[in-house]
Length: 332
Image 1 (cartoon, one colour):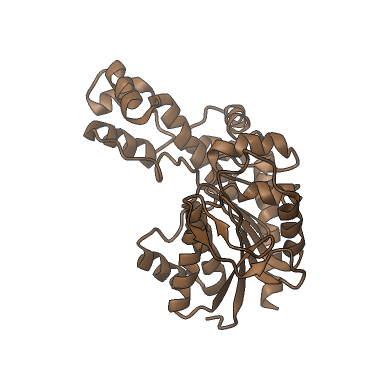
Image 2 (cartoon, helix red, strand yellow):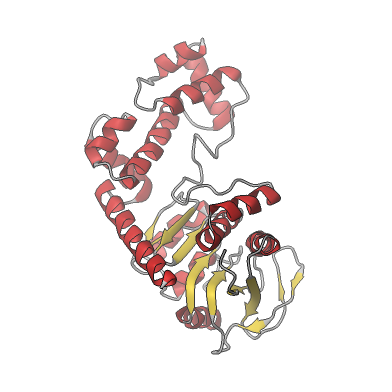
């Protein structure tokens, strides 16, 4: 295990989401109890205590504008104040400055807007809370926004989705630093999953979405997940569930707020993303998960992510190369 002290800076501000701060902090603190050596420093512009989203006061250790600050990992928290209002210039400049003196740079939830305002996400893949991905994309067209990823790793820059995704990305950082075994122990101690994969959808229909209450719908879910490429037309799924297509569609709407066809497409889309990330060609990915043609897959990618599958795969490969380069430099 790496026994060197790993300095983590946590940037907070008035209105910061309390769980954004508490979730990742607990992950690193729990890792310390298991042999890691994370040193957490809370920073704010001016160095004074801040008021969180709940009204609770958060004491601060350092002034975020202090040019002496250097961190191995910089975490920039989010809050409901973004994107409702622009990022304060002092906060933007402080984050831009300390990021230059930090190793990894990460945002939790709408902290992505602070990184974006500081120019730290230009040309990179990124995400934020699903409610605000459209605003991020429109406001910062140089960012390749992945609208439903739990977290995105692009080189040494990480962005994550809603508040609990901060726990996912913190566990991923611990795994990078100390290996899967320790990260798994931390997750077990906190009674959470080790981590959902970074590319997994915030609304993954097979993993993160709610299980249906109706047993017949659960059998439909399991059948689609087991073989996405099979014939999953609504009549076929209705026959599997032992009901009429109309009744099945009504159950999907009542319990899940979607249709059988849209659910099947979501499962196939997740499968196609995973296939592209694993190195399959676009045609192979389309065939593996049941899209009728590469063009159908292309339209699905453009509709959901705003980029064609070729661009998505290229960006993913570029990120892998940056990750490998960053990992090699850390081991020298």
